[in-house]
Length: 583
Image (cartoon, rainbow, N blue to C red; front, side, top):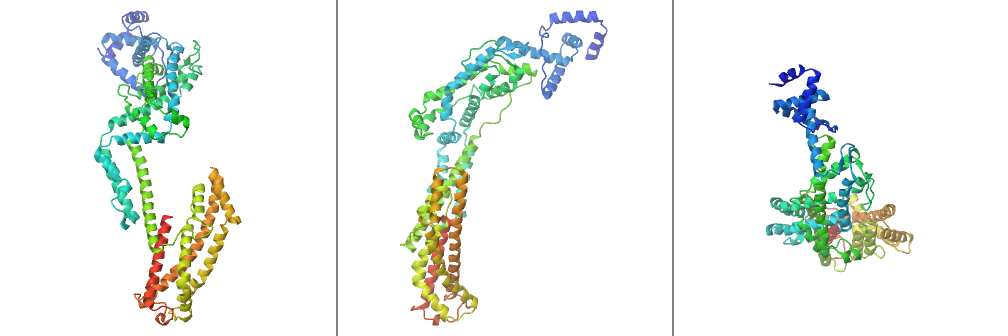
């Protein structure tokens, strides 16, 4: 008989007959129908529940259908709602069978017995909280530990690829490696090869353990105090009474999240054995310079205490059936703990850490290679050169400003080179010759004469400007005193305003120095262009002067002299460029 026939038959009964039939059904059927709490479930789950109940009703035996039909008729509810209620009532019975004292179903609250079990869990967490705070709260430090353990599991082949990514293991450091693009391509090629091999190896056990650790930390750091407060409990040492209860509606969201945290952990497969390496890592690389921390350290027993929280959580989970409690009070038999966002993807975290580290190492190594090459170049070209040619604007001052203020006065190295070159070469070998050329030369263009004349006059002027600038930096002058004040202030404070003000002042100094540098370099470029034009290898169209060979410049062989000057200028520009790039 289908539903239509059944419903037609039932409508033929009068009220007393219906009541009598329902009474018989209740005696034979479910005693679970009475005293059912009917909460409101989420709309989507409620619709799914009713759909499932509808399908279940269709498969029921005839007599069961009669029972459900009359229950719906006298309650004014749908048949599907009756079926859902019955299922929720079974959940209620299971809760009562498991722990009858933790929930008051009639008044819809969680009892003091519930919070008693919660306090037992909190006590176990509070006992290890000092360990967590001291040794596990620094995320960067712990990632460093995970990196070490991770790398211990590398195969020999992967270890070799890792070592190939270390710049100091480059086979040779010739001049070709000084090409920055080539250098970076080599770096990227090696890192890509290492990461590709890393992705192909299986570290699933370690990764799962790390995720388990992250889940445990989330559970440990849950705001249990906030949940206890809803039970009018402020401490795990409080004496509980029957008044220490909490209405479900006030704790629903907190319990929902706690339930998700608990169910996020696979208690059957939650090995955290990698933590046993932590004490040794701490011993070799302490998390803090604090004598108290260093003296105490972290031991294997501390690790065991942390892991014991898993046992406490598991006990709480078996004593308090949170999922069923939430199903019942939400009126949602389809409720299940929310899936939390994935724990850290450590392989990607590792790649980011290692990539940043490799980038830094390769950059530092590149600069070291260039500095070494620069030192070698300087020792070959200018054996008597040093970077403290200036009397007051010294490298020491530069270093102090960089450390205290975080800014670089880059022009200092260039100014030292320029003053050395002008004093050592220009004044002794070129100045008088340039003057003679200006007097006796027949120029192909007045503009060329003007440029060389500018060199002659500006060199002396710029040397004077540089001397005055250097004198200003003396600690006996107001300018230098102010700089040293900012350096001293910056080394003792983290005040951003002080840093910004002092950095701006240093920037002004640097701009002044770079302005002098620019003027000098304009002169050097014109000087270099002149000697290139009078070289025996220059085209006639490039000649700036017609009678250079007939001018008495005090040398036996003008061609040798010009080539010597061209080499001298090229060497200067080469050193200048390296200093500019390195410093």
